[in-house]
Length: 87
Image (cartoon, rainbow, N blue to C red; front, top):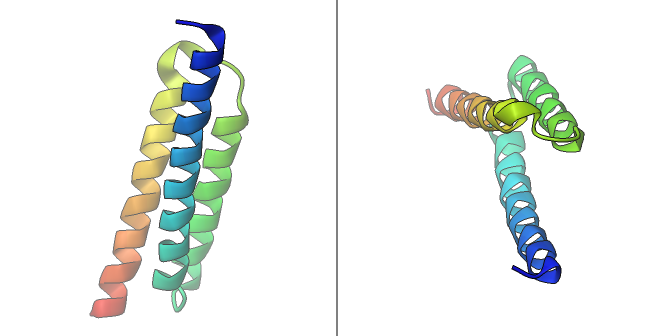
């Protein structure tokens, strides 16, 4: 595959991930508005994810796994906020 194709595909992938991540973040902020501890946890998780994204290399696959688990933690925290808001 040509170098420019790899760059273009990488750009498209990262753009899609960024848009999805921002949409999920916006939903999480609304869901945790009355839960300061959960809201702080979301901020910390998002900050951790941003640090993982800035990390160089993939560390034998461990960085990618950490990103996946951090995404899971963000989603679960948002789900916990939404549950608490509904009950």
